[in-house]
Length: 173
Image 1 (cartoon, helix red, strand yellow):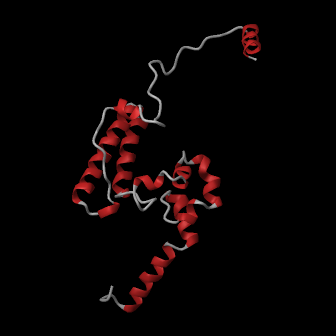
Image 2: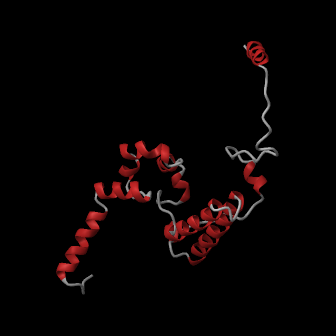
Image 3: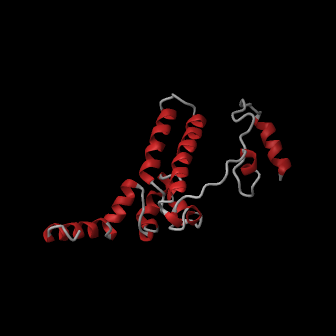
């Protein structure tokens, strides 16, 4: 920046201040969903939109976020990972692939990006550190893990007589 004309340098400095100011930062968070301030995450505006964001706000407010990187809300190479997300989700949305196939493909593609970042060590201590691949059963057996898929996720519905339901309810009391 030393070689930059003083007026341009000042303009760049003012723009940088503008982009990280509280009001601009919050607006960018609400539009782009990439928070950079703790105050954005904990704002009333984020609380108001949280039900529409599928757990994003709750995740960023939780202690779990620091398990991803020591810097908290940082995502290594977010633009590259986001680009992959849209590509694979589009394949599921337009029926080219099943949701499972699309998400498996996304996971593999993101792992490749993260492996390159880890190997290059360009982000130092804040870079990704991947686990060794393991059988899904290993992860499903850990405390707090999600439940494994049921053999019949959508069983055929059955009709029960109203009187029988009442009897079941009374006997359960």
